Amino acid sequence: MALEDYKTALVTGASSGIGAAVVRDLAAAGKEVHAVARRQDRLEALAAETGCIPHVLDLRDQDALYETLGKIDTDILVNNAGLGRGFENFSTTPADEINLTIEVNVLSALHVVRACVGGMRERNCGHIFNIGSVAGLYPVNSTIYGASKGAVHLMSQNLRLELAGTGIRVTEVCPGRIETEFFGKAIDDEKLAAKMVSGFEVMQPEDISNAIMYAVGAPWRVNIGLIEMTPTEQHLGGGTITPAAGR
Ligand SMILES: NC(=O)c1ccc[n+]([C@@H]2O[C@H](COP(=O)([O-])OP(=O)(O)OC[C@H]3O[C@@H](n4cnc5c(N)ncnc54)[C@H](OP(=O)(O)O)[C@@H]3O)[C@@H](O)[C@H]2O)c1
Image (tube, rainbow, N blue to C red; front, side, top):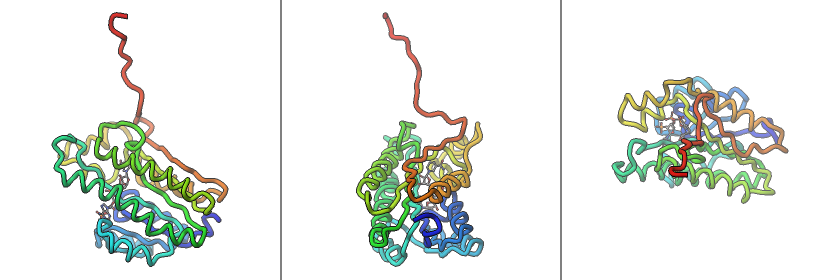
């Protein structure tokens, strides 16, 4: 089982950023690619460009999610749709924005996997990519988003255990900053949003897609479990060394 054995791919959050880049690369690799998002105009443009099959769908609508995804024999799942609200201040973030972030990043992500994994198990064939974040691995000052991506991290790790022996591969991708529409939607203050992708050279959506294509193209005996990738000049972890007072 390897890239040439996978026939059909499903990419959520395909209307921009990472998702659109992955659709382009999987279509160029000859796969039948199903592209899911809410913005119809973007999906239609991508379909005209790549030949992908568009599905206009709000992933929070669980009935529609199962109805649409249940009809597709997905071999490669790129579980990518997501957003981040409340970066500025957890305590003042409206409750519905907390709920929205958790609903899409965690609940929808779980249901997307559930809608696809049954068929994968029956065919003993599949590769699941969950798009997490470095925010799910390290504290990066994002309480709500970090909570959602931390959930994606343990979902991926447990899924790999649960799927042992089925032949299905699971890869979690944890990127740092990428130049997409993400921060513009996440942060209301335009200057602050722009600052998140400036000051040093951030990654491009194609960089993440290249990593996904590497993992899906690896020989079947290889499962790339976790890809952590950051801009060369973005650093995480560590901290200030404070001399112990009085010692
Ligand atoms: N950009 C970064 O620095 C960064 C870093 C680490 C991880 N990530 C993660 O990467 C993933 C992709 O983000 P991106 O950077 O490519 O940002 P993006 O360009 O804003 O893409 C987000 C995608 O998610 C879709 N989406 C959002 N809510 C949806 C819903 N309810 N139903 C269906 N689709 C929905 C959007 O499509 P519609 O609006 O058309 O529905 C869009 O296609 C996210 O999971 C994000 O958390 C991003």
